[in-house]
Image 1 (cartoon, rainbow, N blue to C red):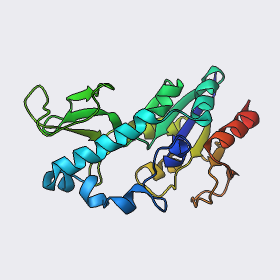
Image 2 (spheres, rainbow, N blue to C red; image 1 turned 180 degrees about the horizontal axis):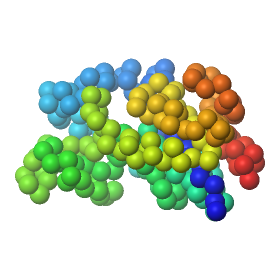
Image 3 (tube, rainbow, N blue to C red; image 1 turned 30 degrees about the vertical axis):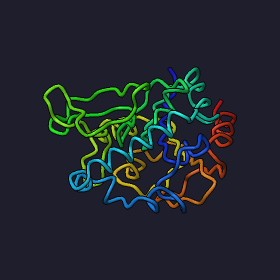
Image 4 (cartoon, rainbow, N blue to C red; image 1 turned 135 degrees about the vertical axis):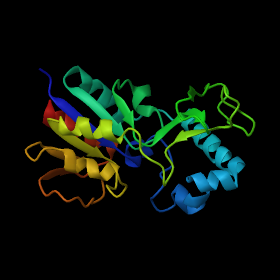
Length: 228
């Protein structure tokens, strides 16, 4: 039976693909106050600003390509039962060929109804902008299918369940400061090997972590050598 490898990815996973990070120096939160573009209150106050912010993120994504790290994780599915839990809203894991991806913070290439959360739509890559007046089938305004600050994280229970089943756990390119995602490490059993891929120091509450101090692409290649 294949071992279950569970991978938690954050902004550092996609940084090499040219996707702007939010928290780093010069990141998006320095340019756009989080309260304005990533909260329900911000959307209520200025929906056009919020829609345009995510339209820009979508245009950025259309130019981006998966990096070697994304492709290496997809390739490892031949040897391991891999689940990717990502805090990223891009679809680069899927573009690279990963088949089991859980998006904790939503998906940039989807929109949903402002009144009925079950009405979720794929955004046509040929028409990527969302505008005021774009509505769901019930006539309500569409919004980005993103989990904003202050909103529940619907996929967290599924993610916790998968982390409890992990035989190997890997963290790539995340500060481990954003909850509830950072708490997933607590769901990993004590005897399970944990690898951290990040060029920077990342503080966690576990001391038995094997730190691969490299960027995503180089780090995943080293992980492949260690595991396979």
